[in-house]
Length: 137
Image (cartoon, rainbow, N blue to C red; front, side):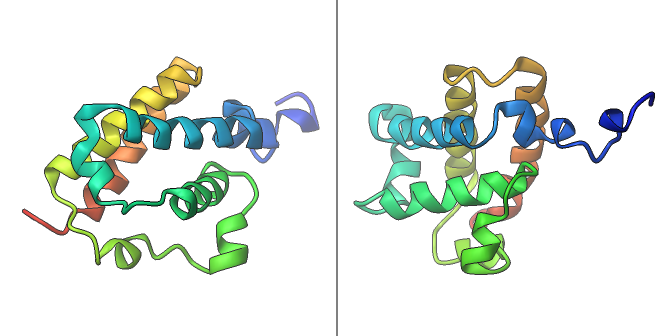
Protein backbone atom coordinates (compact mmCIF):
# COMPACT_ATOMS: atom_id res chain seq x y z
CA UNK A 1 0.00 0.00 0.00
CA UNK A 2 1.58 3.20 -1.18
CA UNK A 3 -0.39 5.89 0.61
CA UNK A 4 -2.51 6.29 3.69
CA UNK A 5 -5.58 6.34 1.40
CA UNK A 6 -4.85 2.73 0.42
CA UNK A 7 -5.19 1.28 3.92
CA UNK A 8 -7.79 -1.43 4.52
CA UNK A 9 -9.57 0.89 6.97
CA UNK A 10 -10.16 3.50 4.27
CA UNK A 11 -13.96 3.90 4.03
CA UNK A 12 -13.78 3.37 0.26
CA UNK A 13 -13.04 -0.27 1.07
CA UNK A 14 -16.41 -0.90 2.72
CA UNK A 15 -19.41 -2.30 0.88
CA UNK A 16 -21.25 0.83 2.08
CA UNK A 17 -18.86 3.07 0.14
CA UNK A 18 -18.74 0.64 -2.79
CA UNK A 19 -22.53 0.62 -3.12
CA UNK A 20 -22.58 4.43 -3.11
CA UNK A 21 -23.41 5.42 0.45
CA UNK A 22 -26.69 6.26 2.14
CA UNK A 23 -28.53 7.41 -0.97
CA UNK A 24 -27.89 4.09 -2.73
CA UNK A 25 -28.71 2.02 0.38
CA UNK A 26 -31.99 3.94 0.65
CA UNK A 27 -32.73 3.27 -3.05
CA UNK A 28 -31.98 -0.44 -2.58
CA UNK A 29 -34.23 -0.67 0.48
CA UNK A 30 -37.09 1.19 -1.18
CA UNK A 31 -36.89 -0.96 -4.31
CA UNK A 32 -36.79 -4.13 -2.21
CA UNK A 33 -40.06 -3.26 -0.48
CA UNK A 34 -41.65 -1.89 -3.67
CA UNK A 35 -40.92 -5.21 -5.39
CA UNK A 36 -42.37 -7.11 -2.47
CA UNK A 37 -45.63 -5.25 -3.07
CA UNK A 38 -45.52 -5.53 -6.87
CA UNK A 39 -44.25 -9.00 -7.72
CA UNK A 40 -46.59 -12.00 -7.33
CA UNK A 41 -43.57 -14.24 -6.72
CA UNK A 42 -43.01 -12.62 -3.33
CA UNK A 43 -46.48 -13.15 -1.82
CA UNK A 44 -45.35 -15.31 1.13
CA UNK A 45 -42.65 -12.80 1.95
CA UNK A 46 -45.08 -9.89 1.69
CA UNK A 47 -47.66 -11.66 3.85
CA UNK A 48 -45.11 -12.01 6.64
CA UNK A 49 -44.66 -8.22 6.81
CA UNK A 50 -48.16 -7.06 7.75
CA UNK A 51 -50.14 -4.30 6.12
CA UNK A 52 -47.75 -1.36 6.65
CA UNK A 53 -44.15 -1.50 5.44
CA UNK A 54 -43.10 1.93 6.74
CA UNK A 55 -41.37 0.64 9.86
CA UNK A 56 -39.79 -2.30 8.04
CA UNK A 57 -38.40 0.03 5.34
CA UNK A 58 -36.76 2.30 7.92
CA UNK A 59 -35.36 -0.52 10.03
CA UNK A 60 -33.85 -2.36 7.05
CA UNK A 61 -32.30 0.87 5.77
CA UNK A 62 -30.74 1.61 9.17
CA UNK A 63 -29.56 -1.98 9.57
CA UNK A 64 -28.05 -2.20 6.07
CA UNK A 65 -26.15 1.06 6.52
CA UNK A 66 -24.27 -0.37 9.50
CA UNK A 67 -24.06 -3.94 8.19
CA UNK A 68 -22.41 -2.65 5.01
CA UNK A 69 -19.83 -0.66 7.00
CA UNK A 70 -21.50 2.73 7.15
CA UNK A 71 -23.20 4.58 10.01
CA UNK A 72 -24.63 2.35 12.75
CA UNK A 73 -28.07 3.97 12.78
CA UNK A 74 -29.84 0.78 13.81
CA UNK A 75 -27.60 0.17 16.82
CA UNK A 76 -27.79 3.82 17.84
CA UNK A 77 -31.60 3.73 17.87
CA UNK A 78 -32.46 0.11 18.75
CA UNK A 79 -29.34 -1.48 20.22
CA UNK A 80 -27.81 -4.73 19.02
CA UNK A 81 -29.79 -6.11 16.03
CA UNK A 82 -30.32 -9.56 17.60
CA UNK A 83 -31.63 -10.62 14.21
CA UNK A 84 -32.67 -14.16 15.02
CA UNK A 85 -34.51 -13.14 18.18
CA UNK A 86 -36.29 -10.24 16.45
CA UNK A 87 -37.43 -12.54 13.64
CA UNK A 88 -38.66 -15.39 15.86
CA UNK A 89 -42.29 -14.16 15.94
CA UNK A 90 -42.46 -14.63 12.16
CA UNK A 91 -42.73 -17.99 10.42
CA UNK A 92 -39.63 -18.11 8.24
CA UNK A 93 -39.10 -21.24 6.21
CA UNK A 94 -37.27 -22.07 3.01
CA UNK A 95 -39.98 -20.38 0.90
CA UNK A 96 -39.76 -17.08 2.81
CA UNK A 97 -35.95 -17.23 2.83
CA UNK A 98 -35.80 -17.85 -0.91
CA UNK A 99 -38.33 -15.12 -1.67
CA UNK A 100 -36.40 -12.64 0.50
CA UNK A 101 -33.17 -13.51 -1.31
CA UNK A 102 -34.76 -13.31 -4.77
CA UNK A 103 -36.42 -9.99 -3.95
CA UNK A 104 -33.16 -8.53 -2.63
CA UNK A 105 -31.22 -9.82 -5.64
CA UNK A 106 -33.79 -8.28 -7.99
CA UNK A 107 -33.61 -5.00 -6.06
CA UNK A 108 -29.79 -5.03 -6.23
CA UNK A 109 -29.95 -5.62 -9.98
CA UNK A 110 -32.52 -2.90 -10.57
CA UNK A 111 -30.70 -0.31 -8.45
CA UNK A 112 -27.34 -0.88 -10.13
CA UNK A 113 -25.35 -2.58 -7.38
CA UNK A 114 -22.04 -3.45 -9.10
CA UNK A 115 -21.99 -7.10 -10.18
CA UNK A 116 -18.95 -8.08 -8.10
CA UNK A 117 -20.42 -6.49 -4.97
CA UNK A 118 -23.81 -8.02 -5.76
CA UNK A 119 -22.30 -11.52 -5.83
CA UNK A 120 -20.47 -10.90 -2.57
CA UNK A 121 -23.64 -9.61 -0.90
CA UNK A 122 -25.74 -12.49 -2.23
CA UNK A 123 -23.48 -14.92 -0.39
CA UNK A 124 -23.65 -12.92 2.84
CA UNK A 125 -27.41 -12.43 2.54
CA UNK A 126 -27.89 -16.17 2.03
CA UNK A 127 -25.98 -17.03 5.20
CA UNK A 128 -27.98 -14.52 7.24
CA UNK A 129 -31.35 -15.39 5.70
CA UNK A 130 -30.77 -19.09 6.17
CA UNK A 131 -29.88 -18.49 9.81
CA UNK A 132 -33.23 -16.67 10.26
CA UNK A 133 -35.21 -19.79 9.35
CA UNK A 134 -37.34 -21.09 12.19
CA UNK A 135 -39.63 -23.40 10.18
CA UNK A 136 -38.52 -26.59 8.48
CA UNK A 137 -35.13 -26.47 10.11
